[in-house]
Image 1 (cartoon, one colour):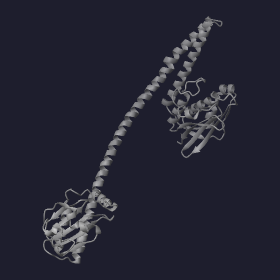
Image 2 (tube, one colour):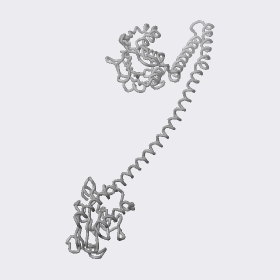
Image 3 (spheres, rainbow, N blue to C red):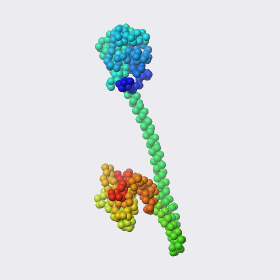
Image 4 (cartoon, rainbow, N blue to C red):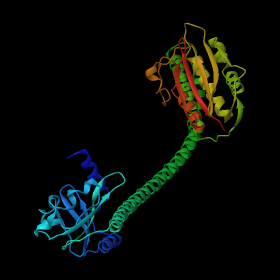
Length: 414
C-alpha cells in the first residue's frame, strides 16, 4: 500500500462514516442529485481499502460490494467528474458486473468525486439509469455543487464529534480537578490538625519535659555539693549533668523548630543588616571565643518577612559558620545579598570545614549531622528551611571559593 493510499484511508476513517447510518441531510442531497440528473437512481459511495460502501441510496436498496467491482472506484482518485451516455459501449465500464447484469444493468452513468481540501478522495456522488442518457453542463455543475455540500456535511459531522469529545474530556478534567480540590482540602485539614498538634507538642516540650529536667539538674547540683572531691561519684554526677544539658539543648532546638513552623508569621519590612547585627549581638560570646570575623556590608537591602524569624534564620546560619570553622585559618563569615527578578537571595558564606557535595542536599533533614565530632543535634538547618519555606522561598548549600560553605536562601517580594 502506498503512502498516498494510507493517507487517503486515514482521512476516510477520520470521518467515521463507514457502516454508520446516514443522516437526513445526506439522504436529502442524494435524492436531489437524482432529480438534478433526471434519473431514478443515485448513491453516495465511499471507497475503502477493499470495498465500496453505499452509505445512502435513492431508487434502489444499496449495499456493499468489492472495490474491484465498483464503477466509481475506477476513476474517483483522479478527482474529475466522470459521465458516460452508455456504459455498455464504454471499454472502461462495459465489463463491470454493474453493467453486465451480474449486479445491475447500468447504462447512463455519472459520478462527482468527493475530494477533501487536502486532496484525499473519499468516494463519489453517483447517479445512473438503466437507459442511456445525457447531461448538460448546468447539470454537471450542480452535481459538483452537491458533492461539495456532502463534503461540508461530512466535516460538520466530524467537527460535532470532536466537539463532543472535547466536551467529554473537559468534563473529565473538571471531575479530576474537583477530586484534586477535595483531596487538597483534606490535606489542608490534616495539615491544620498537624499544626495544632505541633503547637500542643511545643507546649508539652516547654513545660512537661523541660521542667522535670530542670529539677533533675538541681538535684545533681545538690549531690555534687554533698560529694566533694574527684571520686567516682563526682564523675558520675558530672556525666549526668552533661547529659541533662544535652537534653535541654535538644528540647530547646525542637521547640525552636516547632515555633518556626507553627507560630504566627508577622510580615513587615526590615533591613538585613539590622537583623544580622541583632544576630551577631546574640552570638557575640561565641564569635569572640572563636576569634571570628563577621562581615555585614552596610548596603544590604530591606526585605519583606517576619523580622523575628529572619533574625533567627541569620543567627542559625552565622552560628553554624562560627561553630564549624576550620582550625587552620581565622574564621571569616560574610553576609551578602543579590537582587532577583521577584525578590532577594541572601547568602552567608564562610571559610570553614565545608560540607561535601554529596551531603549538601540532606543537611536540611531533621537530625542530620555530617561531622559527628562536633556537638549538635542536626535541627538547626531544618529550622532554617522551615522558616524560608514559610516565606515562600527556598534554601540551598554551595561550596565557597577557597573552601568553606555558602548557604543561600531567597525571600520573595511582598
